[in-house]
Length: 384
Image (cartoon, rainbow, N blue to C red; front, side, top):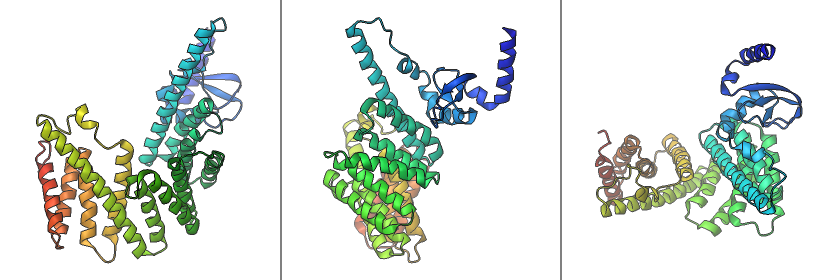
């Protein structure tokens, strides 16, 4: 009817930019907001027509974070199965439902994680909430499978300055871990790291060091003392000591972190070289599966960029310069950027590392960095 079409056009004009995100429909009723859970949500997504929001702002926040990716995926999940089905059909339908839910859990978690890596903590929260909600549906409210989502929500909440909300999520994760006698050390170390970071944000440094020490112990028992997983605990502990002006301890820990990453990255570069020697026509920058399968994961890349650049800042801003230590960090960054196919940054870091290492009597380091620089320059896309 013309009356309803006019009403829809008026509504669309009032919504402005939000109307272009997804069609909006105002409804009577008492549905809960997809974002905050409040009752009497009156705005419905015009795409899936299954999600509701308090207002357009909440709808836009959810859309930008995750809903755009899962809008149509929600339809088969939130649509009830027909009643008149055989037992076999219903069983198959339930299995498919769980598969779809698990897919959304993984997608929502990885999306939220990427936002956190990019420093977009506000955008991460809706996606992380979806990972938690679907995880609760699939695994139950007390499952240890929910701990990663709680920790991610805590990190995102702390990132936007909402420490009380972060504390709430951490308490939930801690409660689940305490109630799970066979909880793995891998999960426990992540919990202690999150607790350590939270305590550091509150400037409760003693408690922060306590949790980070537990993080290091648990990570080393699972992954090894010199693993990159364990190095994260060293890095955060160094930051706490640095804030306490205990620079000698902090510097020794930063050096340990740098060395762990250098060893890891040197092995990764050597692996790439071996593959290329066996297949000369291939390149690490072509996307060939045989090469890319040995590349670093996105999580490792994000961690390495964040950690090594932070250590580099500390080294470059130190009152007393240590060229050898700075050169080691730059060498690690050069290898990292090379593996990520960012050749201009790789070459810049390698050149700087080579200039610094020549100031100290370390012939082996000079040769190693020079070889890396030669490898970088040999790539056709590298601009000299």
